[in-house]
Length: 212
Ligand code: DX5
Ligand code: ZN
Image (cartoon, rainbow, N blue to C red; front, side):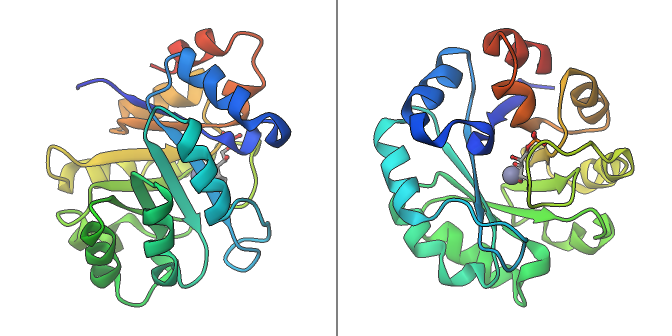
């Protein structure tokens, strides 16, 4: 397998020192920056919106991997694309017409990602894998950083992998550390999101290297 894409989640960064914390993970070898957008409806938490993504874009030198945990994501694809998202991942559970959301994301020249929550069966999304650039398997219930990894969610990875084209990015998010990263990559993940593990470590570079 080619290199695993590491995408630290800035949800665990210090929002009063966001630029500093972005530079820290960039220097430490992060490939992407994972930006968790929550609306207080799809998930019981509110985080970052379009203006913050726009500001992050000005200081970040790696791609912005924007995870939309929001209802009606189709309404916000254009503003987030224009704010500088390089990858836009919406939730399968939040939309009616999956294909049209994928097409909308791609129409802005942005990589199209779709995510499934822990209770969603992987088999339901197989028919969309050819249209997607990225499929995100949540390994916690979305909404908060710092939760424990749900190992049964990782069992969806081989099903996705078996049915995916070679260049599909298969990402996991939630409770990822050196140990759970190994479980996920052995089952087919090639991109890892990690918030707490990266930002709360003494040595961020070592933490990122330990995920690879
Ligand atoms: C959870 C978010 C995650 C979160 C991961 O809803 O989607 O990206 O920041 O945090 P950790 O790695 O701490 O579980
Ligand atoms: Zn996320």
